[in-house]
Length: 215
Image (tube, rainbow, N blue to C red; front, side, top):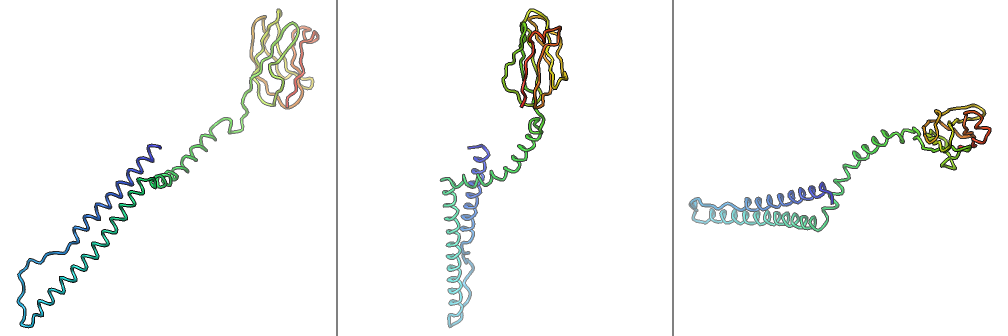
């Protein structure tokens, strides 16, 4: 259980027990006052004595009612505290915890909006083109439209490069690569057909080209 939920359950219990203590204090405070004053002189018919008895009877009746109401209040608070200890506090804590949901959702939304991927900006994909004498191969058979960082590796014995052509127009060309070396180039590929080839000398005519389909 989260620390925050445990703290709220503890505060709720303290509140209930505080109310119970207040009820006990009120019970003691509502006890009828004792009449220590000297008895008044009564007339010969005893009317004053009857009035005193009636007043004390009313005080005892009123005290009994207050004591009953206070006892019921204390019993209610006691059983509420017991129910809280048995698990009802979980429901209260969950309801209180739910008040934090809007703030958490707002924070998540802000974090998502600040993410580059959520903003619709395409992520750069990696692609490796390996050149030999005299062929070109790619490490992926299927390409989707987007931005690519192409690592060009020269495993041949001659200097090569890599050019990207679309509809007869060369879109990008890498640096020349010595045998055993590599370089990188970045190119945007839309959906369509491309030709990757080596533009050095007559290497393309010798077979250093590959047709690439981008979807």
